[in-house]
Length: 453
Image 1 (cartoon, one colour):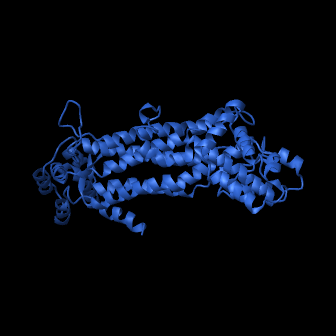
Image 2: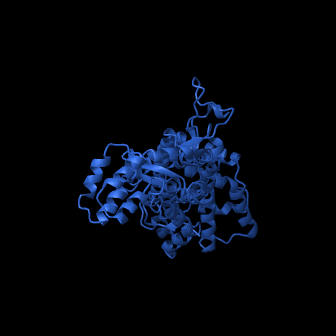
Image 3: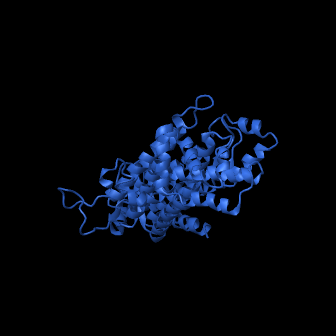
């Protein structure tokens, strides 16, 4: 069956993205709109605008919400084929459930004074919030945990850093990974603290129908309380639609997270390419259909591609959802149905990064050999020591000695012996080596983890 599906999220990657289907499938969207409509009816009853509900009637409403089935969803779609209006179809479905029951007299109060976007914004904000809490943060925390384990394990593994693609000065593998962890922790905390907005304000945001019908009710307070009952932030100043700035800020946080991870995936790819990182060889796997020796960094490449797809959608949300003609046009509706797609490609990428991390390890012998083959990388430290000793031409003398050249240990030590400095300065210069010139890389890595305790 999955072989014939158009989207890889529902086919090839279905197992990975399945948790998001509980929040962004068409079935879920229909179910959550039924939930909002029935909760709205209950809220009208509790404020005495609608007659009180009996315990059995409240249980009946709860049953419609909690026992919503695929057959119920299909029934709504049958109504929509006639109405060509999805929320009206939801209303007709609820009416059908009230008919021939004690709730039949409440049919006029279904979707009372609302516009479709009152129902839709609440349903989709619920999906965004609950998926964030139960899927997105769980996946991101798992990725951070794997990154942390990797950085801790290799915090003291020395390697040459590169700037502009050229050998710079030594660092440690763990510290370079710790940078990504620190960046991701900030976006993770911002994602976790984000408050999702929704609206219940009527056709153009003024409560027109509700105020005209029941002016004795404080509809502003009612709206605030009703939206807040779902753990959402009420937005009272709207057109027919919720201004999506708040949702876009959330998507921008996911997009920033993904951009950081693209940076990470590309760096790891390069470390693998340069032989800094070795990949585990799995006996039955194949790296190429023609080259038997290949072990490809496919998890990181797959992640990079999926992160790019996700971010292209998130970018479009920023461009599209912040703009609406006058009080409302419908072009946002189809875009909003892709939220699960953008989050799904993100989830696939995060999962692949974790899989890839578990299959790489540093080639410590190669890293050490490369360090010891390039003594010119301590030139920064040497010229700084010379500056401190009062040498005004320190930089220039090291530039002449090292720029564009590869220095061996003997080359460097010979230079140390030849330069005109006092014995204390000479000993400082000789104490430098590619293996010891790592600054506070290990301490900085430890500090990141200590700060989290």
